[in-house]
Every structure is written in C-alpha cells, then in structure tokens.
Length: 330
Length: 299
Image 1 (cartoon, rainbow over the protein chains, first blue to last red):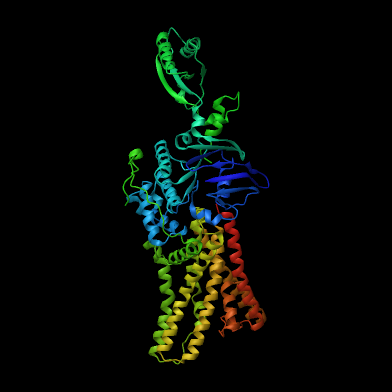
Image 2: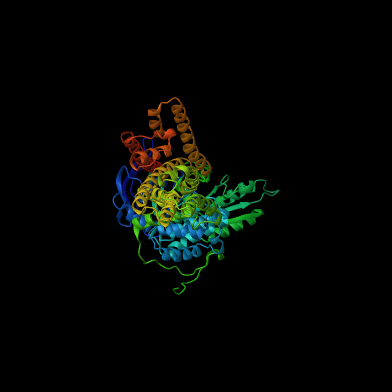
C-alpha cells in the first residue's frame, strides 16, 4: 500500500522526517508518535502535497512526486482538525466533497447516503452540522474521506476529543472500514493503547525516525502480566509489600507499578505487576492473597502496552506515560 | 442492495447494511473544477443554500434591475428616441449596490472555507490550488456579471421595444457589456483578495466596503477640489486610485462612455491606456495573491 525509501523532509530549522523507510501492507496500520514526530508531514508527502527533501515514496504503487493527483483520487483523507462548515447539512457537505473527488452528481448522492449510514448518521444528516456533537462531527469527517470509495484512507487522529464510548465506537468503525469495506487504513494516534486494539500493524516514529515497525501481535505478545491490588490489614500494615514478598518466594517475578495512572486511579493503593508464567500463576496469586488474609481489590490481566517501546531502560514507566499520554490537546 | 454480510453490529449503533463498492466513473480535476465553479456561482445568489442566505443577493439583484425597468417604462411610454441613460453609466450610478453585493458574497465564497478549515479537504482531492482559485474567481466574476449585465439587458430590450436605432443600440449595449465584464473581473479580484486575507466573515464584509467606499470618497473629494481650482488635468489622473473610477476611465477612453468624473474630465486615449493596464494588472495581481494565499492555507 505504502512504501517509503529513506524519505527525508527538512525545513530550515527542523528535520521533520529523517531517512524514513517503511513498508506498509494492506490492512489497518497505526502510525504512532508524539506531536511533532513527523506524522502530519508524512501524510502530506503521501498525498503528494509536499515534496520530500530526499528519498522517495509510493502510495498504491504510484510515485508521490509524479502522480500526486492520481493518488489523491484513490485515497481518502480525514484531517485532525475541525473542517466542517456549521451552516450546511452533512448530506450537502458530503455530496459536495464527493463531487470534488470526481463523482458525478447522482453517484455522489447515492454514495453520500450510503456512507453516512455506514458511519452511523441517520436523520440528523439533514440538519446543519453546527449542532452536531463531537462524535457526530468525527463521523462526518470520516464519511467525507470514504465517500469516493478510496482504496486507502489516511486518518489523522480520528479519536481526538472523543469520550471513551465515542472512542470505542470510532475504533470499531475504523476496524470495519477494513474488514467490511475492504479499504486499507493508515491511522495516526499519540494514544498508544487504542491502536493495539484496532491495528494489524504498528509503525512508531519519533523525531522523524523510524523507531519500530511490526505486527501488533509482536508488540503485545511478549509477556502477559497480571495487575494485583490488595488491601492492608492489621496483621499486615503494608499488604502490598507482604504479598510481594510472598509471591517472590513462590518464584514469581513481581514488580510494583505504582504511579502508573492507568492502574492506580484516584489514589488507590499500589499495584503489583506479576508476570504470568502459566495458568498456575493465577492460583499462586489467589492462594498467596488468601494465605495472608488480605482483601483482593483487583486482579486483572495486563498485556504489555505499546507504550513500553518508548521506555528507555531504567526510566520509570510513568514518566514516559506522561510524556506520551498528556499530548491529547494540541 | 447486495446481500447482507455477516452482521456484527459494533456497539449497537453501527448497523451492517452491506458496503457497496463504487465502480462508476471518476471524472477528475476538470469536472471537480466545474462543479466547484457552479456551486460557488449558485452560492453567490444563495441557490442551494438556506432561504435566509437568498434574501440579500436576491434583493440586491432586484434593486439593480428596478431602475432599468423604470427607465425602460418611461422611455417606451414617452416615445423617446434614445435612452435617457447610457449603458456604460448604469454600473457607475449603481456602484453602491454592486459594492454591497461584492462585500456580502466575496467573504461568503472564500472566508468560510478558510475559517472552518475546509480548504485541506479540497486539496487532498484531485483538485489543485490553481483549480480552486480559478473556480472561485470565475464564479464570483460571473455572479457580478449577472448582476451588472441583467439591467443592461433590460435597457436593451426596452430600447428595441421603443424602436430606437438597432445598430446604435446594439453597439452601445455591447460596449456596456464589455465594460461590466471588465468591472466584474476587476471587482471579483479585489473582493476575493480582501476576503481571503481574513477567515472572519464580518471583517471581510467591512474590509471590502471600506476599500471601495474610502477610495472612491477620497478620489472624488480630491477631484472636486481639483475642479474647483481649475486643475482639470489632475482630475483625469486621480481616477487611477479607486476601483470604480478606474472602470469609468477605461470606458471613457475606449468604450465611448461619457465620464462621470467631476466636470466630465475623463482620461483621453493615452491616459486611458494606463487605466486599462492598471485594471488588467490588478486582475493578474489578485490572481497571484490568491495563489500565494492558498499556498499557506492548504493542509
């Protein structure tokens, strides 16, 4: 679908892309990086709108420098920012955008009705978009990228500004764009957790350089671990420490995960991460907790997050989590 | 509708209704440019938009045509042998209406796309910067031409109805059309450049009105002073500094119009050539400025 070969983009002061070589196969691919990592620059180059300083790139087998127009006819693009005029309805807007992609008027109308239904917009599609919720706006933005039945869509931060439910719906929709519509997807995000649920393949870039490119299963397969949180009792004033000692002596690898916002929300007690060695691990943990007479607050499976590819050895995880997770609003 | 594939409605909100591929024609750049042109032209008169946005342009169109209808009515009933008004003078007399139309519709045409950041959606499609600028420019110029040529058509029809000299009327009508065509291109360029500078529609409206009225006010004031001092040569050159007097100068020099300058001291052929160059240069400059403006606005 997409292939770049030592692609570089230098601006007078910054190097946005630095000899980036990736090969992206059909399917859903996540492009991960912080703001400023070069994601938007890469999308611009892939759409043939911005010449690369050096190197080359191909989209759908077409060279971005020479065949930009042909690429843009077969590719859909959903920008990160708002792009919807508030005084027209979703139907009018998407019909217009379909015509801008070269669809004749009747085809544009049919495709618009279909596409808006597919993204989950019904009667409200006749109302001016100014009154839409963020979730509905994101759906219209996705619809205008899909309306001309592209072979590939580039989605820039499609879950931005959505609440958790909206996020899940959008991610499910993105998954369907590939599985049901047969359209390949390149989706960018700086929130790593959501990509491992949606993507077949993840490309991580940082500072314009390729950090890692591999199947999502490779990222998350490494090890499973178990998050365990327990209460303190009179007999064990520090229940977590007691459990940690007990589990260690039982031969399990245990490490504290305190400070990781994901696992200790709202000032809850420290959480232990127990590496799962096998099915027996669950029983060992259960028995250890019961043996100590502690209250078990939670015990949940935890996969290694993509976030960990960013974690330099020796850096506490919560630092990187903050660095990469707090860039929601830009 | 193809058969439903295995329905797995995610989250209960999204229903699987079977995706259909599009195998029909993709008409490409030229088609998209024409579609954008017609959408923008219709939009300038509020067609295809809400009823509210039709009110102003349609009212101005009516206001533009009514005086022509009255002139025709008077000319026909009193059996005049020539129209009491030159074709070329009409747009000059009703310049305020043209100015209002431009001020309202130029920002409507370009500021919205900038303000709501729709521009990147265009440029991520086969359509390119030059297509966008040309389509928008041509659409607004056409809208202005419709506004300014319609009353001339009424005058011409009335003149023929009153059995005035066919050859003379046709020639004068054609000169009038050339004049308003030039005016439409020139004004469209000014309006779009000013409107494209600001994403805020209100600023755009105010700025267009300001450019047209302040320059005209200043020029005609100074021309008045020059006339009072019998400095008639200066009058002809001062007209270079406001859009409507530029058009007046060009048509005085080349389209046998009577100048509306104070004392009728319009430019001669030599000065007229300068006027024409300035007008054409301004049209080219506005095109260049718009292209530069959208280089930054794209994506």
